[in-house]
Length: 373
Image 1 (cartoon, helix red, strand yellow):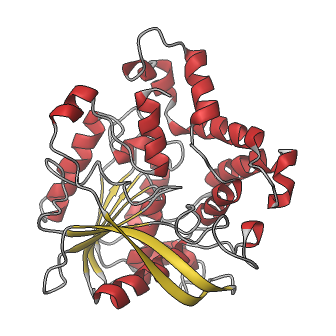
Image 2 (cartoon, one colour):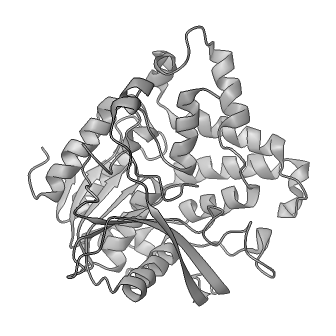
Image 3 (spheres, helix red, strand yellow):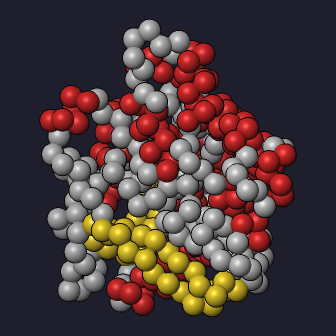
């Protein structure tokens, strides 16, 4: 696997890093999170299923101050874990753990927090309940209050499914944070995104080895099909047309080699039921389904009290900029600032050095209360 593809897998599983080897060698050491696990007994999901024990894995950077008012939450994206925001944390970045307490929470279904792959009977494998974005938000809220006594956050900052969580935080707990930042993600999953996610699920389930989720070995052919579909949507068409993959591959690498590497090694050691569970979580998100809004997405968006920096990628195929443009006018205190990038969805996690700089510059200014335009 090339260095870039390892980093791209890290975007989905751990984090995304896009600097060259020389830059990495010269840069200060990246801050590392401390891992924690918060256990909730008899956690009731929105589906009505009660998990006897729900585990939330999360990381922390820095120290919570005596007033408990220096905390920022960074909820994870699809199949990611606590390192997923290294592009935003540390020297030269918007978030300084020397003065902030940063919490990076992990979604149910990522294989570390409670998931189909690690939950005992009777909720193991395909019997694990579909957990919603609100389930995740409510669980992390309980953790912040009970574990740390945090009654208020400076901000919630999220990429992709993390952006979905940021919007949900602002609707479910409108007075709990001053600001939210949403990159490459929307407050609702719209029809075309659901069709895409269902095609990914169908690819896995079509492999006979899947066996309705009761497999004895991972359905590798189904997961390889999943990988190819995901890759087709990940970057923009101009990214492929201009062969920007050549900027990160070794000289002489061919397009068929790039495609084959994505097909076979896009996500390392995945679990099929986990992949499907988080896609179902993604599919079901709509802030309008929050209790009290009766399915009215616009009304829910209008209830947001926090300052919002809304940063879609201009070329995202997962969460098109047009979706953000329809949502933003309904949010009272919202700055819509598309990321001018050809890197598609990963632009929202600093996929290129230019994307990383754009994000860090504008997020830092937003957190300082300065204009980002």
